[in-house]
Length: 265
Length: 155
Image (tube, rainbow over all chains, first blue to last red):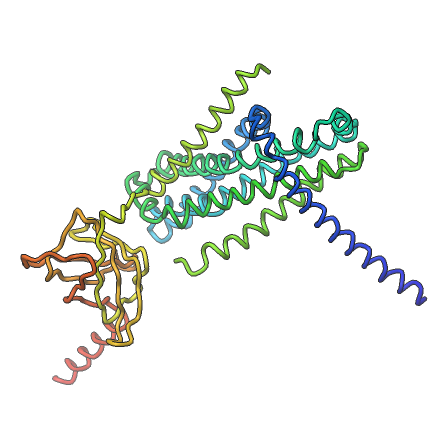
């Protein structure tokens, strides 16, 4: 019986050490990617190719979901606000919730499942088919040649995707409330413009999306590079990318919001 | 895929992103580029600022002419010192009257300026001497009840 307890405690300790070791490994890998990103910035064509796959091909899902999120926000906001006779404030509601929270967060969640999983699967499969090892044999650094361009492409495209998401959302809200329901167009825009501040709302949302871009792509790249070189390993790594980056996005969002908007009316 | 086509798409993507950011700041956020050299700072002491907040507009005749940049409590006069950043296109006379008003019944509060007739204009760092406090609903109700009681007594 005591042996059982000892082994259970050992098991817990092993898990804790393992996860801390993995966190340290991930951080060291992140620093390695940053150190070796000189090549990808000099040969910007490499980043260009990845920008096409992570940024341009994510546009459709970002645009469509932004539009629909904005339309739903407009509908729901109108339903509640018209009870108080202040349906013209629906512009403020849509714009503030999109620019501050939904734009960066939902765009980052979509980006993690659309582009992050693809990055992990691609790098993981390259590792499983020993392409990375072959590159190493040819004195081509796989971190500089494969990992860093994907990382920078994700970091660059994330803020743009979040901004496009927010703009499409505002347009969707405008479409539903002004065009379909018939809220006054002038008060829709003027109330929005007087409530949304450049520095506190738009700049903070932009900073948030930059943080999310770094977090999502760093996780995706690490999981792919660290994936066990089997079919099962790659599929597990892809799942872990989506789960971990979604959780990190939500946790990071809370921390950033607490720093940015505390005490700001 | 052809290299040039890919470059074209990426270029379009980046341009769309930058346009989206500009729409957000200009159309949604209504970014006014306040140049510090094109504005002047004035202060005013208010007995009670009610619900006035930093970044609230300063209006004259309904037009926004500045913003509240800071609200402090003064222990010398025991009232609130409100700092306002004014657009230098709109100079105001020295005897301008500043009062805290409310937009609508329950709306946000702002500072309303009523220009006086003085020849001398307010300069950077000047202080508005004539101020009017915020209207506090509870005080109004209290005064109304008090007057009502006084009226009833006279009968």
